[in-house]
Length: 160
Image 1 (cartoon, one colour):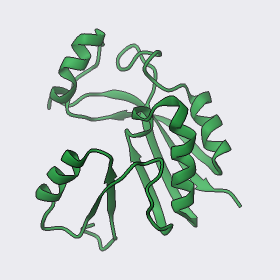
Image 2 (spheres, rainbow, N blue to C red):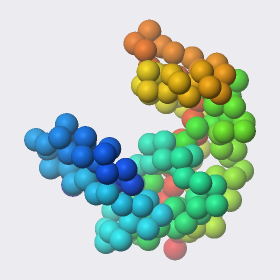
Image 3 (cartoon, rainbow, N blue to C red):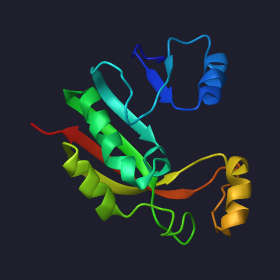
Image 4 (cartoon, rainbow, N blue to C red):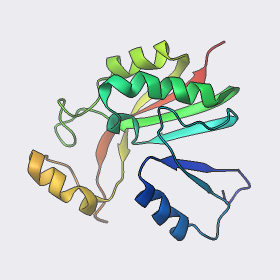
């Protein structure tokens, strides 16, 4: 947004959107309360960024979500999908996404995988402290109090 791009941010949680509207009041970001599986937005996005959304969507709706993101895309859209990966030092296999499951959903929804890499998601450790304790997770924390969660970073493009 500070480089002249039009930015639209979505979330199904109205409280989250309201908080963002207040925090980013002096920006041109458009905030929308909507379901990521059925946004009702007009197709026109040149870039889509999923920053830890995919794994929060119920398993049976993930393909619907990716299909909706594909509907919003143009023929040149690049989609960055960042989602938790199984790890001893992050989210265990039972809660994380296997690459094969992600790949199947991605390809079935009209996307083409351009690249895949393991990366590290720096998040707010305090925000997941109770979850970490409840699930007995061994999540690494950096010196700044940020999580070091292993994630998959897929770069996707639309298929013809």
